[in-house]
Image (tube, rainbow, N blue to C red; front, top):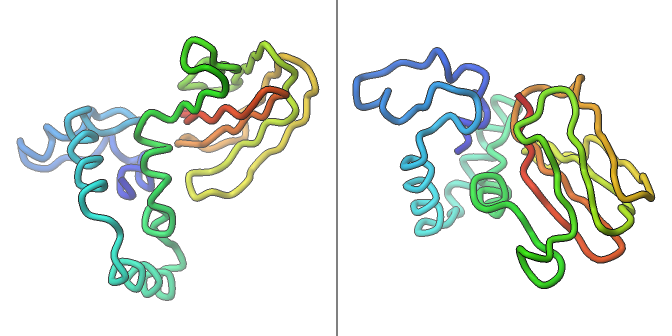
Length: 169
């Protein structure tokens, strides 16, 4: 998951053997064919991050200055690659907010049946990039200065919290 997230902008040009090429969809997000994502999710769930991986991640950081966020925060794998929607209220039929289009390029729109107290946009590494406090039931967020990739949007309304993966293309 780290490789496809970190090098998403280069996926279109990756070529390997016939078998290696079968893994990629040769688009930006998600980059892998769905069967590969399912396989990696199964591996992630059956083989939790070990102390050895934490130490290796720290050693790589000391040399390269970058970290694998999925080692530091394994819970992000499900948030980014799994079903990222968290419903507040009685379940999917009663979700409190929606976000569209997704993937997005220049603008994303958020609508809710309740007042939106705030919207936060996080990078895949968990860094808060933007914070909005619209106080109304709809909002539009300009994405023009954001690099293509996977982001997490957290929407807090008067009735609960909605989280969703946002893909910027």
